[in-house]
Image 1 (spheres, rainbow over the protein chains, first blue to last red):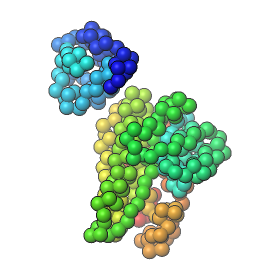
Image 2 (tube, each protein chain N blue to C red):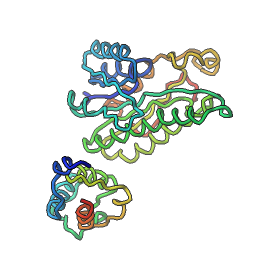
Image 3 (cartoon, rainbow over the protein chains, first blue to last red):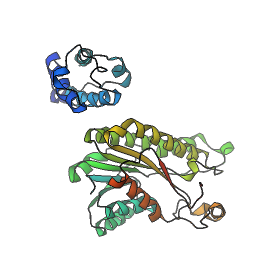
Length: 88
Length: 239
């Protein structure tokens, strides 16, 4: 990734990533009030296709590419946010 | 009516050109991809315009992983609602004599490139909650044809890939199907035609337009509940 591309992406602060995730999840039928750091994707009824789509959104926003095996290990909203922040 | 534009690879001649024209008749604006036949691609563009929609010619080699056929189409017509993976090659020879290069390039063009484009398509279509992917397979993906081990493997692989991706994205309103032509009267098939027709119950070669009509149907709203299937257009050969 070039410096310019990094500049074009939002800084991946924990707050920014969590905001992005909170905005994206309702597209998959998740009720906004159910989204907490400890909520599991299983409980939220977010499936593998939803997570693949969420990964696309995250890549566009923060330039962090998550692979299938990365996403498979994530269980909660908080883990997803932490992973993106750690990779940015 | 169609949502957005349709992209057809290998659309400068034969079945691809007929598909582009048929999709235009179905109301689609069409991206006409070709490798090195500018004149053929422009003839296809004229056929698209004659059918009452618009098109653009998109030169590019589907083998190139960096090839982006989507952005120019999206800039011109909006979201891409239909992708037809039609570009294909043959490099025939008996298996015991087939070179590694002939194996690799047929798999790379007919299967790997089609997967890459399917992947790019469904990434977009899943988020659009609508889309159509049609992969042009072949009767040879199901029924043996001596001298085409590489082509058969690629086309059988395409059918398997079609089924799997279809299941993965079905709940997003995206369908992925294959159309498997039998012996169709095109330059690519002509050398096999004479001996092949004995095996065709209809006792004639198919027309590119007959394959294109199947693609147009699978791309239409009427086919919204059909996914993961392979529609044989083969005069009864696979029956």
